[in-house]
Length: 454
Image 1 (tube, rainbow, N blue to C red):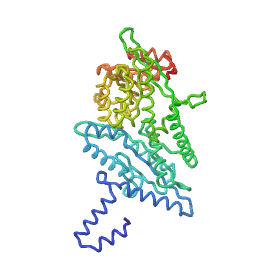
Image 2: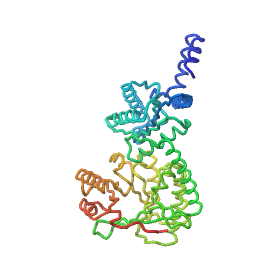
Image 3: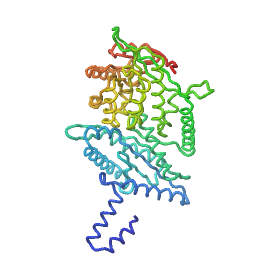
Image 4: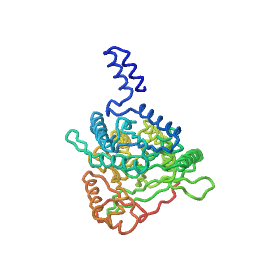
């Protein structure tokens, strides 16, 4: 509702009604938790800014920042929604003050777009200035600590920045570009600013994603995915260790010799919500292999699961159904989820893991060390194996601080009675360091390159 209309409505009614109308206007415009603009009002402002650009005689520069708090859902899971609301309010206040320091009015440009997502619309702002402001907002979160019930939490923010210039896209496209850049920032570890592709680059990206959607759908329909395995070797001399391997996914189109790495097709599959279908394909084909090939009963096959599948209420039933169809020994199955997926919805991940463990399956937490690496969160996840992120492992042989971090993760894992696995063991010095630190298993090119399984 425009301000002029609101003023007329207020003037035409008695005092009691005027107050009620003002409350209704505020409820329709502002978020009750953060007191920032709500999503509807923010999008109205974005619509207006795009209209202004299309009608302007001279070139105008605006920018949209999409800000997503890192680890918010984990705090919600541990402390409850009251704590989550308090955190959102404190962050909003923090950013209000920071935005004011830039001479901007937070009530005109900052809004809450979702559970833990915010939007910042920067009027008349070129890219360099927008990046400077976004960097400052990210920096304030780095030093911010959230205190709740005598617990202290650090919170990060991933920021996607989309310039709005010249040939402006639609409101929906601008938001998608900023969201995509934000997702890229999260994939790179979070707590950073990521500028989206400009001009024709973003159009090319959309076109490329559309092509991947078609290719992935075709691969699912035509069984063009293939499975590889990579050994996970023990570092111990005892003979009673479990034999492990990880199942890896590749794409090999009919009539093509080239095998496509998941790094190429997994990101667009995630954006188009195709990962649950891919996970189902992997499980169905892997279970069929285990039922027909009768592999070694002492071998444990580790299968990766996506966050989308963890959050899919029907996915557990699908696994149970496939177990019955193929009569697979659950003691030969280990499922992997990443640390980032686990802490994004801690309680749901814990329930998912426990239900599969009750069936006799094993579980591994992958990429530990890439996110919050909080041992307090680890205590809530009933996993059997702790796979240490490869970026830590690769640097351990040459960097004392990284080595100390790796040693600490390994020691705590052992105290929690977890078997530890070092990923990305690519050469002998790294292998030697993993063995020296007492890590239980190692995986990487120094052990074995992935080999075709199915």
